[in-house]
Length: 107
Image 1 (spheres, rainbow, N blue to C red):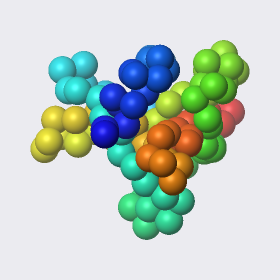
Image 2 (cartoon, rainbow, N blue to C red):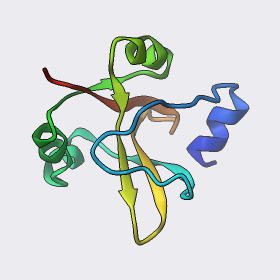
Image 3 (cartoon, rainbow, N blue to C red):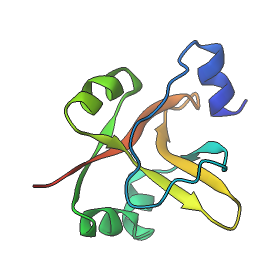
């Protein structure tokens, strides 16, 4: 079962605020991109977000809104070819979302 459906079924429908680095397209659907820490390094995304001035961390779903109040943003990867906005997520062994990549602009 797709992660988005699992979240909807579990009542964890959520929305995210600002977008970092990649320009989020309002016409593209959102999907979860399941990754691990190694992907973040070898894909160049960690370096890209940091060059844009972001400090990074992983956040569980229950802490997203609290962290947004403190200035953290959910980070996305936009796939222009596939026309998809990807949230960058890690999953547990049962394929439910464990955490989402967030960033805060360094001052």
